[in-house]
Amino acid sequence: MRNPVGGHVPVAGGLARTGLGYARELKAETLQVFVANPRGWATPPGNPAQDEAFRAGCAEAGLPVYVHAPYLINFGSHTEATAERSVESLRHSLRRGREIGALGVVVHTGSATGGRPREVALAQLRELVLPLLDELTRDDDPTLLLESTAGQGSSLCSRVEDFGPYFAALDSHPGLGICLDTCHVYAAGHDLAAPGGMTEALDLLVETVGEGRLGLIHANDSKETVGAHKDRHENIGAGHIGTEAFGELLRHPATDGIPLIIETPGGPDGHAADVARLKDLRI
Image (cartoon, rainbow, N blue to C red; front, side, top):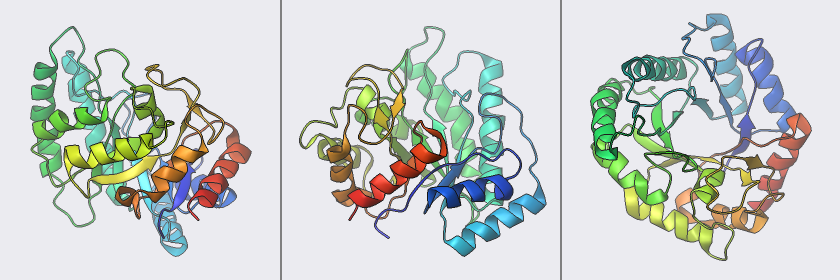
């Protein structure tokens, strides 16, 4: 399939019980889940029975699975406790990702806090994350997918070209990939809505990190205008990016075979409509 299309699904009540049911409602061809509270540091062990049922259900339906790591993770933080908890939290997401058969774990690229220079934050990133990447030695380990931010504060990676220094800090590790969030990239200043704008951004991504590093796309329209540095997702075609840009994304060679996950407003009905809209655009 050129691009499986799906969404982030809720899992309260059980990965298989809730998540797979929601995915069926959306007619999803891929899905993304949290394996911990996204706004906390807890590292729950998971439920082996639900894990097995989820893996089996996804395998039977041919659904590629992705995990989104908690939002609090920030390897550029000047606070020692935050840095240490970030390591523990990401290690947990990677382990749980393997246990449920996830292909990738998405983590936000973070920011340099406390007024420290980017170089210092990137050096700390290297010290903390390279050992985690080196632990990914099994064939069924997920890829670590870096997701740039909308450019708020002292972001370490918001523009597409920022992936260059970030990858360099991590020695372009083979366990590393990218999750491209269209809303974030647009908010950071890449005018995806302009004719050829999406193509230009994707060309730059390949030029910056090389071919084969794009592992997942978060397909989200934007409530805000280009360069607003605000992370406010909108339904596909209802925001400032518009449907034409998503059609352009689906025709680019770098996106061939890459799954699209929506993280848009609207509940089940809105999500199902967005999944259907993206499926129509890929034809």
